[in-house]
Length: 164
Ligand SMILES: Cc1cc2nc3c(=O)[nH]c(=O)nc-3n(C[C@H](O)[C@H](O)[C@H](O)COP(=O)(O)O)c2cc1C
Image (cartoon, rainbow, N blue to C red):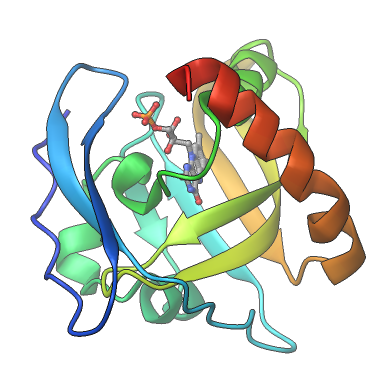
Protein backbone atom coordinates (compact mmCIF):
# COMPACT_ATOMS: atom_id res chain seq x y z
CA UNK A 1 0.00 0.00 0.00
CA UNK A 2 1.05 3.64 -0.40
CA UNK A 3 3.30 4.74 2.51
CA UNK A 4 1.31 6.52 5.22
CA UNK A 5 2.20 10.14 6.00
CA UNK A 6 4.02 10.68 9.29
CA UNK A 7 1.99 11.98 12.25
CA UNK A 8 2.85 15.22 14.01
CA UNK A 9 3.86 14.73 17.66
CA UNK A 10 1.02 16.10 19.87
CA UNK A 11 2.02 19.07 22.07
CA UNK A 12 0.67 17.70 25.38
CA UNK A 13 0.92 14.29 27.09
CA UNK A 14 0.57 11.41 24.68
CA UNK A 15 1.39 7.75 24.06
CA UNK A 16 3.36 6.49 21.09
CA UNK A 17 4.06 3.16 19.45
CA UNK A 18 5.39 1.77 16.23
CA UNK A 19 2.28 0.30 14.61
CA UNK A 20 2.53 -2.56 12.14
CA UNK A 21 -0.14 -2.59 9.41
CA UNK A 22 -1.59 -5.60 7.57
CA UNK A 23 0.95 -5.35 4.74
CA UNK A 24 3.90 -5.34 7.14
CA UNK A 25 4.63 -1.62 6.82
CA UNK A 26 5.14 0.37 10.02
CA UNK A 27 4.62 3.93 11.24
CA UNK A 28 5.04 5.68 14.57
CA UNK A 29 1.61 6.68 15.83
CA UNK A 30 0.91 9.16 18.61
CA UNK A 31 -2.32 9.31 20.52
CA UNK A 32 -3.85 11.32 23.34
CA UNK A 33 -6.85 10.84 25.63
CA UNK A 34 -8.76 13.67 23.94
CA UNK A 35 -12.01 12.56 22.32
CA UNK A 36 -13.59 14.71 19.63
CA UNK A 37 -17.38 14.20 19.75
CA UNK A 38 -19.08 12.91 16.63
CA UNK A 39 -20.60 15.97 14.89
CA UNK A 40 -24.39 16.10 15.29
CA UNK A 41 -26.56 15.70 12.21
CA UNK A 42 -23.76 14.62 9.87
CA UNK A 43 -22.76 11.45 8.07
CA UNK A 44 -19.10 10.66 7.53
CA UNK A 45 -18.79 8.91 4.16
CA UNK A 46 -15.93 7.36 2.23
CA UNK A 47 -15.49 4.95 -0.65
CA UNK A 48 -12.59 2.65 -1.39
CA UNK A 49 -11.35 0.43 -4.16
CA UNK A 50 -11.04 -3.31 -3.58
CA UNK A 51 -7.73 -2.78 -1.78
CA UNK A 52 -9.13 -0.37 0.83
CA UNK A 53 -7.46 2.72 -0.67
CA UNK A 54 -9.70 5.78 -0.31
CA UNK A 55 -11.27 6.97 -3.58
CA UNK A 56 -13.85 9.39 -2.17
CA UNK A 57 -14.20 11.27 1.13
CA UNK A 58 -16.99 13.71 2.00
CA UNK A 59 -16.38 17.01 3.82
CA UNK A 60 -17.21 15.51 7.24
CA UNK A 61 -14.66 12.71 6.67
CA UNK A 62 -11.95 15.23 5.78
CA UNK A 63 -12.77 17.46 8.78
CA UNK A 64 -12.92 14.64 11.33
CA UNK A 65 -9.76 12.91 10.13
CA UNK A 66 -7.68 16.09 10.33
CA UNK A 67 -5.81 15.21 7.10
CA UNK A 68 -6.01 17.30 3.93
CA UNK A 69 -8.16 15.73 1.20
CA UNK A 70 -5.20 15.21 -1.14
CA UNK A 71 -3.44 13.15 1.54
CA UNK A 72 -6.57 11.03 2.08
CA UNK A 73 -7.36 10.24 -1.55
CA UNK A 74 -5.32 7.18 -2.53
CA UNK A 75 -4.28 6.52 1.08
CA UNK A 76 -5.25 3.22 2.71
CA UNK A 77 -8.09 3.40 5.24
CA UNK A 78 -5.77 2.26 7.99
CA UNK A 79 -4.48 5.87 8.02
CA UNK A 80 -7.25 6.17 10.68
CA UNK A 81 -6.34 2.99 12.53
CA UNK A 82 -6.24 3.60 16.29
CA UNK A 83 -3.74 1.44 18.21
CA UNK A 84 -6.41 0.68 20.84
CA UNK A 85 -8.69 -0.96 18.25
CA UNK A 86 -8.38 -4.76 18.07
CA UNK A 87 -7.36 -6.32 14.77
CA UNK A 88 -10.29 -8.74 15.15
CA UNK A 89 -12.79 -5.95 14.39
CA UNK A 90 -11.16 -5.22 11.04
CA UNK A 91 -10.72 -8.90 10.18
CA UNK A 92 -14.47 -9.28 10.74
CA UNK A 93 -15.14 -6.17 8.59
CA UNK A 94 -13.04 -7.42 5.69
CA UNK A 95 -14.21 -11.04 5.74
CA UNK A 96 -17.84 -9.82 5.80
CA UNK A 97 -17.59 -7.35 2.90
CA UNK A 98 -15.34 -9.57 0.77
CA UNK A 99 -18.05 -12.22 0.94
CA UNK A 100 -20.56 -9.66 -0.35
CA UNK A 101 -22.34 -8.85 2.91
CA UNK A 102 -22.93 -5.64 4.87
CA UNK A 103 -20.88 -4.98 8.04
CA UNK A 104 -21.91 -2.86 11.02
CA UNK A 105 -19.70 -1.94 13.90
CA UNK A 106 -18.30 0.64 16.27
CA UNK A 107 -14.88 1.98 15.38
CA UNK A 108 -12.54 4.28 17.28
CA UNK A 109 -10.59 6.34 14.78
CA UNK A 110 -7.30 8.16 15.19
CA UNK A 111 -7.11 11.76 13.98
CA UNK A 112 -4.03 13.37 12.49
CA UNK A 113 -3.48 15.33 15.73
CA UNK A 114 -3.57 12.18 17.94
CA UNK A 115 -7.08 12.71 19.31
CA UNK A 116 -9.82 10.18 18.52
CA UNK A 117 -13.49 9.87 17.60
CA UNK A 118 -15.98 7.02 17.78
CA UNK A 119 -18.31 6.16 14.91
CA UNK A 120 -20.97 3.59 14.16
CA UNK A 121 -20.06 2.39 10.68
CA UNK A 122 -22.01 0.53 8.01
CA UNK A 123 -19.75 -0.84 5.26
CA UNK A 124 -21.30 -2.18 2.05
CA UNK A 125 -19.79 -3.69 -1.10
CA UNK A 126 -20.42 -1.64 -4.26
CA UNK A 127 -21.59 -4.12 -6.89
CA UNK A 128 -21.62 -3.33 -10.65
CA UNK A 129 -22.80 -5.96 -13.14
CA UNK A 130 -22.54 -8.63 -10.47
CA UNK A 131 -18.96 -7.76 -9.54
CA UNK A 132 -17.76 -6.00 -6.41
CA UNK A 133 -15.81 -2.93 -7.50
CA UNK A 134 -15.18 -1.33 -4.11
CA UNK A 135 -16.73 -0.51 -0.75
CA UNK A 136 -18.63 2.36 0.87
CA UNK A 137 -18.63 3.22 4.56
CA UNK A 138 -21.30 5.47 6.06
CA UNK A 139 -20.75 6.47 9.69
CA UNK A 140 -23.31 7.76 12.14
CA UNK A 141 -23.17 9.08 15.67
CA UNK A 142 -22.63 6.06 17.94
CA UNK A 143 -24.56 5.40 21.15
CA UNK A 144 -22.44 6.09 24.25
CA UNK A 145 -24.08 3.14 26.03
CA UNK A 146 -23.00 0.77 23.21
CA UNK A 147 -19.45 2.11 23.34
CA UNK A 148 -19.30 1.61 27.13
CA UNK A 149 -20.53 -1.98 26.68
CA UNK A 150 -18.05 -2.64 23.88
CA UNK A 151 -14.93 -1.19 25.52
CA UNK A 152 -14.18 -4.22 27.74
CA UNK A 153 -14.70 -6.54 24.74
CA UNK A 154 -12.28 -4.56 22.56
CA UNK A 155 -9.79 -4.32 25.44
CA UNK A 156 -9.72 -8.07 25.99
CA UNK A 157 -9.45 -8.76 22.25
CA UNK A 158 -6.55 -6.32 22.03
CA UNK A 159 -4.83 -7.88 25.05
CA UNK A 160 -5.17 -11.33 23.48
CA UNK A 161 -3.69 -10.02 20.22
CA UNK A 162 -0.77 -8.16 21.75
CA UNK A 163 -0.10 -10.62 24.54
CA UNK A 164 -0.39 -7.74 27.06
C1 LIG B 1 -14.99 1.03 3.21
C2 LIG B 1 -14.01 0.80 4.33
C3 LIG B 1 -13.95 1.73 5.36
C4 LIG B 1 -13.04 1.56 6.42
N1 LIG B 1 -13.01 2.51 7.39
C5 LIG B 1 -12.10 2.40 8.37
C6 LIG B 1 -12.01 3.41 9.37
O1 LIG B 1 -12.77 4.37 9.41
N2 LIG B 1 -11.06 3.26 10.33
C7 LIG B 1 -10.20 2.20 10.35
O2 LIG B 1 -9.34 2.13 11.26
N3 LIG B 1 -10.28 1.22 9.42
C8 LIG B 1 -11.21 1.30 8.45
N4 LIG B 1 -11.28 0.31 7.49
C9 LIG B 1 -10.42 -0.88 7.66
C10 LIG B 1 -9.02 -0.68 7.13
O3 LIG B 1 -9.00 -1.02 5.76
C11 LIG B 1 -8.00 -1.60 7.89
O4 LIG B 1 -8.40 -2.94 7.78
C12 LIG B 1 -7.89 -1.25 9.36
O5 LIG B 1 -7.63 0.12 9.56
C13 LIG B 1 -6.79 -2.05 10.06
O6 LIG B 1 -5.58 -1.79 9.44
P1 LIG B 1 -4.31 -2.72 9.62
O7 LIG B 1 -4.78 -4.13 9.68
O8 LIG B 1 -3.44 -2.44 8.45
O9 LIG B 1 -3.64 -2.26 10.90
C14 LIG B 1 -12.17 0.43 6.44
C15 LIG B 1 -12.24 -0.51 5.40
C16 LIG B 1 -13.17 -0.34 4.36
C17 LIG B 1 -13.25 -1.35 3.27
